[in-house]
Amino acid sequence: MDEQPHNSSQLSAPLDEQDANKLLLQYLLLHRGACDEDQLLKALKTLEETDRNDNEWQSRLNKWMARVNLTLNALDYKVTRLRNRYGGWSYVYVDLAPAEDTKAATRLSLDELNFVQWAIQRFLGEKRAVEVEGSKSLIEDAVDVIFGEKFDSSDFQGLQLRLYHTCGSGELCQYEEMDAVKVENLLARLCQLRWFYETSHGRFGLGVRALAELQTYIRDRYNVLECTVCDELALEGVQCQCNEKAWHVACLRHFLAHVGTACPNCNSSLEQAVYMT
Ligand SMILES: [Zn+2]
Ligand SMILES: [Zn+2]
Image (tube, rainbow, N blue to C red):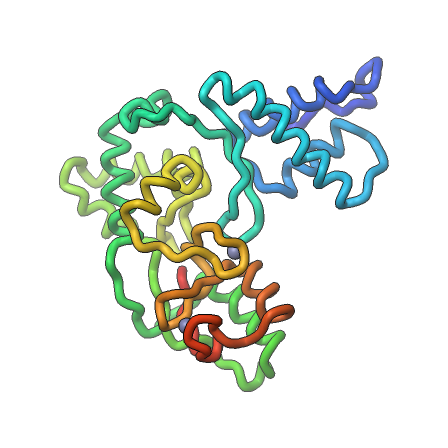
């Protein structure tokens, strides 16, 4: 399937802004309604062969989002921008229809949504941090690189504790309302739709679509920390042992470089922090 935006050099006339706006929205929808910012910027640059610097491209993308939302809001949809698991930005096309039972009804059945809610309880319910054992996740490796840059990497041996916001498929297959084969198939589909993602260790976590569509649900029901730097929900990265402060990976780098190395709440060193993975 050809998912590339049209190359404007193949068109007879250059695209006007409205056409480019429409095509960029189609591009987002072709990617199941969820794209990372870099991906969208690249598509926009292909559509509009104009010279702009990074800031200008960024504001062009912001303008695109504002424009398409003017139209989409009337239809109870919108494009929203939120932090992804590494702390970069993602854009997600979401359904604003207020009734919980009609939400996302075209994509997930009620049974499937019940499973999603059950799985969220497994991801985000009360948990204790555990000793770090075995190989590390990509998030933990990325955190180690950032701490290694800040602290002497020969001294920094990694954090001691991890808090899981992900589950293995074995745990998720214990859902009693569906047999294991059905759960496995549903997990694969949820990952395709970017409701969930699967780590290289075969663990599952909440993807950007779930965070976008179920943001209020998650904030109301679960004690999930907001990132100290960007104020968005932080499920992956690090948190302080005081359970008050958390950082996305990208935001941790910013914090260590520009703010400090201690928790703003309890003042303990971030070298004592806990991985969230
Ligand atoms: Zn953040
Ligand atoms: Zn603290």
